[in-house]
Image (cartoon, rainbow, N blue to C red):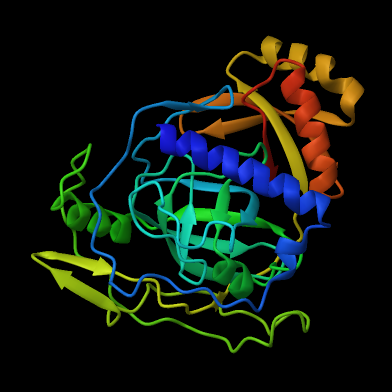
Length: 316
């Protein structure tokens, strides 16, 4: 718990320094940093108990249906060589990520919704403890997704169920605070790849309609569990226009949604929309669309201070 809190304070301090320095971190660096030479050993499987950082509660859980949109950020030299939440050494050049609630480790696909670039990364850390961010990526991730200069990106984060179950089964052999899911075979198949232009040179060619499962050759076998490894392959997915919204709440009672809609109307355009989730009808309250991430951050803080601490940034 204390290490999480210390890391959150470091992250917030680092972000403050970046703002003061004109976001120099997001412009990348040619500095060469060296990790310990010893290879990292598998770490125990961790889900974790609810925890609090700077007054905000987070509730880790196993969610093999996780599929969310929002804003990604990245963290680099300031944390290179430090310990992650699951005891590994953070490497800014590795394909890993920090997430607030997903089990450690988990495998997720992250797609930049503005350019269609998509990579697979392994979640091995907690964070980002900043309102309005759903995942914190490494410097290398940001380079591959082509948002390292911007510092943030509109993304979709999808858990890879089979691969995450394999990771959990392998990590559970090491112990941990939770027992992982029963091992399942990682999917096999080929990857349909469209060549990418160099980062920053415009939109790539049209993406294939379907992207097959990740290849199986890049795996290590430990016991009966097959551990998939992200291989740095960048895929392209179809790109469509997206907008940024603040989702202030979702209610089963329409009256409650109407009250919140009226309350938040002073902050900008607010909409109440009925949404069917399974067999349940919800009334969703959103503000927007908003033009930029900076504007979304400002409106999000206003909504939180207005008594909606669960409000979040979404991309749709």
